[in-house]
Length: 89
Image 1 (cartoon, rainbow, N blue to C red):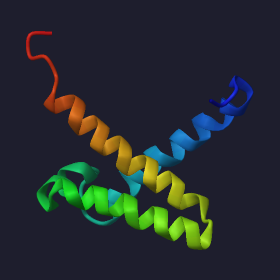
Image 2: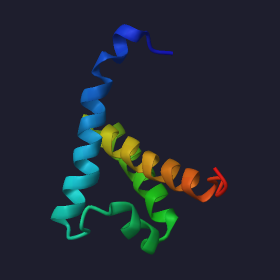
Image 3: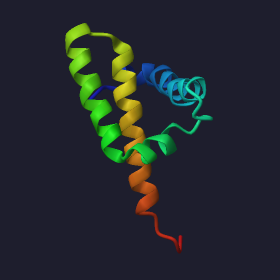
Image 4: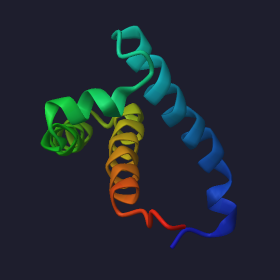
């Protein structure tokens, strides 16, 4: 488990992920709704993106791939939470 001191860079990482989720989607014409696009493609698309980015990171060691992996994982996590939300809460 990372020490609190090591987590000081997490906000920078999170901001990079937010920029990726919003900015890239808009540039590709998804109107900032990247995950809705992925849902139309099927959830397996998101899972495939994670696998591809892990393989690519292992070859090139580009830290941007790590941000992309986390961003795709967040979208899957968010969809899971929305699908399992208690409608009475």
